[in-house]
Image 1 (cartoon, rainbow, N blue to C red):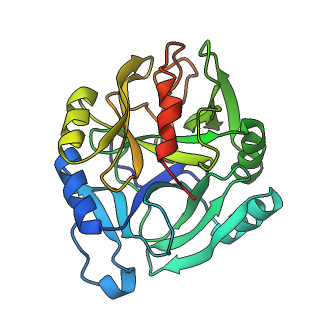
Image 2: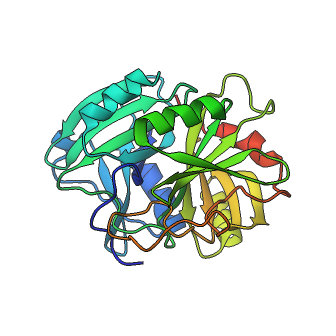
Length: 299
């Protein structure tokens, strides 16, 4: 896939990790994905935020936890043309504003929200920093998924805010939907069952592409990760769900799906509901996955 220069508003453009120890997180993720997360020169201005690079291309971010009680987590960011306008839409649609729109130097403008079901996410209004340089390649983001107890409410919210449509996937069991915008895949939505503890809110989880899900899982375990769902196959490929040594949940998958973070300059890469874009669309999907996504204790 060619390098991305711009993301269409309404599609995921970035992901970052909030960590209690960025050095340890950089070491863990570097060993697992081959990332580099060098400390920036302007630490005071950036708050210690690091750009994660793979083969010279930016793939994600790494930030120290800023607020007391904030859990370690991977965060999804949606590209928008106007963060302020999006904030008003979020309020009107019943979402909560966690961080009001704010400028991040000359890189862009961000805001952070929670949808009405509790799933937290961010938006990014690009300036100098457009988002990820690559997606759906080994070591890069491959998929974003919202886990929620009330998909009907979440569907209404995301349609009002971003114009997303949903396509119900027949899994033969688990309730799963694909978010779409202008025919492009945005991400997935999974209904959380009673096997999720009551204290676990709705949340987004980020999938990373790898060449071998089994090997990546073993490597993650060696680095101190906990395996929540052992590698298994479905129509999207082979994937596993883990938590890093600090408890932040993420997934690895050996077949990233096409335009899962579709860029504005990737016009021909349109979604097909029957393609291999959806990590949770197989009827033999292990029910343990639902139990273990709860490890992503997003606020």
